[in-house]
Length: 516
Ligand code: KIV
Ligand code: ZN
Image (cartoon, rainbow, N blue to C red; front, side, top):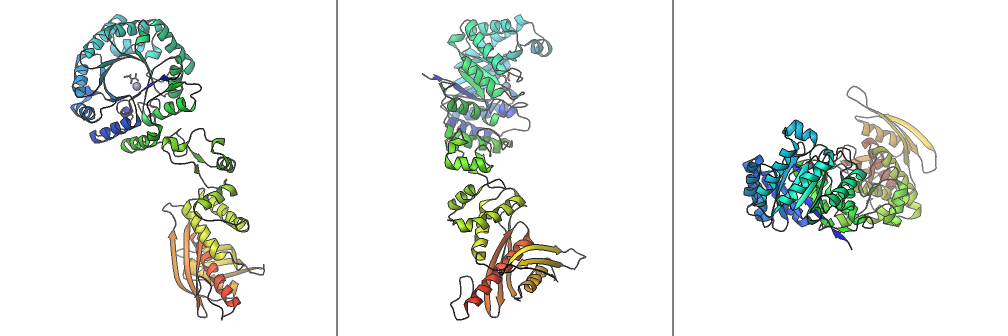
């Protein structure tokens, strides 16, 4: 039977302590609403004593968000607890989270208190809070650097004073999974009353082990995990909510537990938190990074297209991340290219696939990632250039404010010869067209010339579209390349080929498509 683990989200408190992340009251309320939809059990909405505005914003959350318990943080001092009680007054279910440092370094250097004084303060804090809200959580700050016997003494006293949740924070991200497992198991076995309260864990990520430590603690019997969306938080951040939840779901064989979280809301929560805090999610972040379900290598792409689970342990749809992403680039194979073209509506024959794939690779090499718009440009170019004709196989231009624009082109003729010609012009494109005219022996007149980027990026493919005229016939041509002069040459040659094709078919025959 699976055990319920409660999710305590502290995005609005510890998460907001991320350097640079400050949220306004409207954003906090929006995030709280999303956390409610996400299904977290407890929302730590802030640190009320920090400012009157903080109290107002927690009050707004209490009014609007009714299902989860709303929690406010307080030191074990009356001033803090009074502020928290005021902020939480209107909550459907309220929790005051009181804390005090227990490790020698916190006690001696920061608080300048003896062990006995810390215990007395903890007890007073819990008792004072208990009379002012529904639930009291007690945290021994820096618990993982606190001697076990003292931790046992403080927790025993806090439980006797009425704490309903005991939190064991790894405040500085110092512990390791085996050690933390051992500590949690030891506390559950040795602290009187610990079996009757919620045992909570709160891990920071200074050594990159916050999630692993939280999961180890769950295995040891912890019933509450404290975490933040996207793992944001003080310094290196807190344990990431989405990673903990998805690890427990994906490896339910190792973690026979369940949470109230609706995974389908994870991505929406992640995007909202990122947008409001301005903290960008790293692309390779587990579960919510933009690359979390993206496949780049040809072998992986081939695998996931045959069977998604070859390289995916979670269904991206299940976390609201859309589908599997095949990133088309220099390492993509024909299978992936054909698949994406099919999704875009192009059915490509085996014969056509060769030149299309070659063209794709040339563009992929130049710009690393090939987008749908690039593929459409490649296909349009292929459509107008698939008939045998002239082909530009080499191109060099010289231009600049002091140079005479000159172009040299190498053109393969329909007969298979390669012809090299040079010409000058008023600009590099005009010079290229003049050189092509010499190489093909067809002197066409340029009627229209249009150039556009198929995406906004600086490395986008440029698409050239031209209309040319030769002996009363006009034809259009398209060309695409990351080099706009090369795109222009391709467009011109494809229009020339159309004209040639129609002229070869005889003037009496009806005009071919694209030629009038
Ligand atoms: O990291 C920590 O110890 C905290 C406490 C206030 C729980 O955030
Ligand atoms: Zn913390």
